[in-house]
Image (tube, rainbow, N blue to C red; front, side):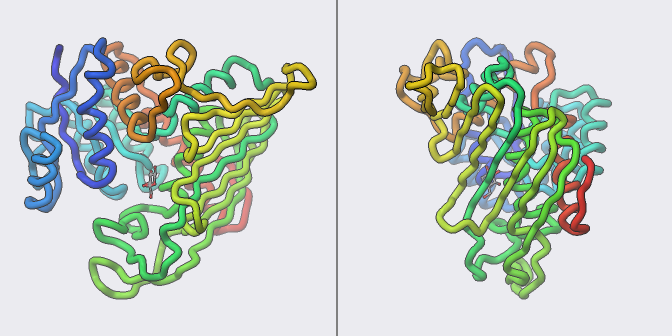
Length: 378
Ligand code: SOE
């Protein structure tokens, strides 16, 4: 089996989810030609990166990501560093001819995203962006149902991503644990961090967004910065709501917040068409709810499909026996498997950098609209 030698940049939450996936993929997708090898990981703190490398089984580590790019024994760069580093790393990795998998959001804004997409296209390197929720079997099944035409013409698309970890004013901004609250590092707040997942999935399931209007709010205006220890203005959006038109004529309603008490990671979506509807939520991720008008009258109602069947449900024949569900971490295994398959077949992985620029465009238009209190075209 040819080896595909991995260089991972960043070792936080996402570094762990990706590493776990690279370790498992060959066991659960044995037919794949390429087998990932945990060749090297990079992070600034020598003590921490050494410990991470030992814990997860990396053969080596670097304290400067640029050294990873210089190495001939690295084939694929996986960017799990904070958002403000994506561009520089991706441009340099493309120049070195490395394959690239990049955490979401692709970039700080559309302009950066365009530059990154142009760079990987010019270099001709396989590339992908980690919008992992597409690869939950129930969400992939939703895509298959929509594409089969079972819902007919689509009227509504409704989606949320709700969390509650920012309600306390004592949560700092910046530093290793709260860089998502530092505008200079994250670019935007919930828009790029959470709503971007809703947008990516919506574009995939329901096609492109033509125009939108939105509002954002920053509820806590100042927070202590973990690096300076000073109280500084908060530059990111804490919550956002967006209304939009899709190119297929349907109406979209999107909301995201880090102030929705009781919700830890509630990603939901619902789609209503002329022949039926689908709804799904992340807290019950192995179930897809389906309503079809073609059911016999007296029996008509929402069905809750337990998406664990080997023959009929995407990805599930890789795992246990029918009826036994899988979870969050498996989405990353599916993502790596699909990426490796695309490398093997020479096809484009989706979402790739170019696809993810479309999500950036919606994020930028949303932020612009919220600021100007206007409708914006995408
Ligand atoms: C934020 O808390 C976060 O970790 C996002 O950055 C991830 O993309 C999302 O999947 C879970 O929540």
